[in-house]
Length: 132
Ligand SMILES: [Zn+2]
Image (tube, helix red, strand yellow):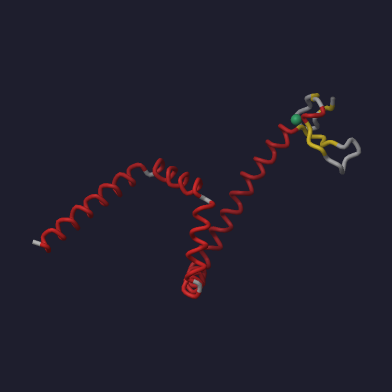
């Protein structure tokens, strides 16, 4: 048994991660506390990083877009492949993002669907009129 330095609870050795830098050979913080502090860190610094990225992107949007466009034009095959690979690797994320967007923008989504259908209907009508 070892007392966790964070929550102060005595726990069995299996409740601690191995830590070879310590003489005891195990971490002085239990797995639960480590996990919690890790996720807190992630949340805090994830936001920081996102904000930084956003700021950077905002300040350099034009040149970033320009560079990306140049690269896409210069490497159409690679770009296509990359996009496909990314999509294949992030299918769940794509679906998740889509679903989240729909959840958060239910009204917008409905409007989008309505517009889409209306446009399709209109196009159809145009098409039919033209072919008459
Ligand atoms: Zn603990």
